[in-house]
Image (cartoon, rainbow, N blue to C red; front, top):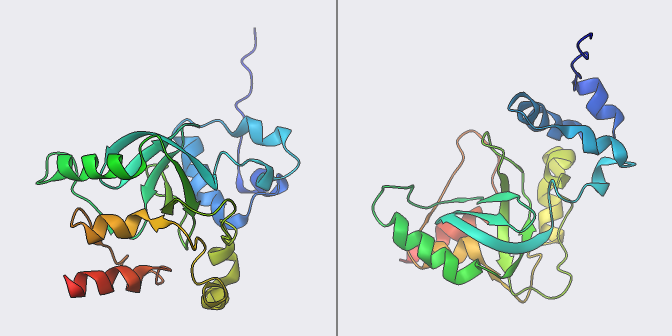
Length: 200
């Protein structure tokens, strides 16, 4: 029996599915690591696949002070902050604090310039206790807008007006520090987090 020809998921094929060009490098890397994007072909366009970059979800597991998993299996890494890694001082305490804030609760995800990392985790600002439908910009807005991205942030200064920004709460409580990504654009709430650290 002849071997089935391996499927090729190149840039051209992913673009044909309606996937934003800026997200293709991350998806291509995921394919190399074993992820199978076949299900994308059953959708009319990329935006219909909400599980890749969900806007909300219930937290079922907390890995450490800045990482958790949603009920649909998506792993989220909170953007703009850094909590102690496994084995480092206070990593257990940081994880427990994050559990108190989000475990078994519905959270809302707000995306920024960078939506995923090299480990395949979604990068997001995490909100809890928001109004029913918080007003967030599309997941790929920051990339697609290029140098005009600041304009969108000014028009939408805070997407969730009634909830708590969990990234910020972890910094306030001393379980995480703000992170500046070298040689990358400024994140939406970066200065807000840095201001907290100055006052501490």
